Length: 74
Image (cartoon, rainbow, N blue to C red; front, side):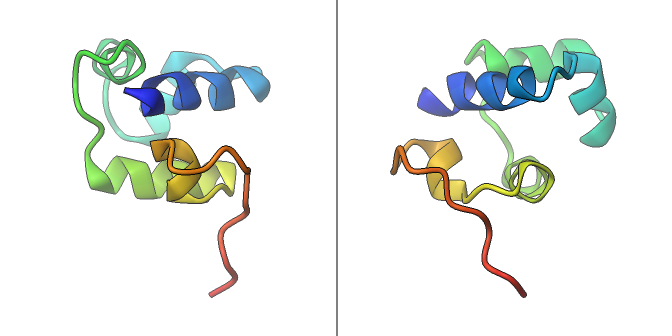
């Protein structure tokens, strides 16, 4: 699962811990770690939250593109 590496890279690029992102997603660090390790699928609501937080497209996180594009303005 390419998204597991992408969400890890995005988090590390901002010097954040798994606990920081788990708090953002209102989950536990161990549960979030399973997303990054590819042991648990990423729920759509968490994908949306991460896209907004990192200002990247879902296509980038999901691996459909290697181009980091910001979310379109609403």
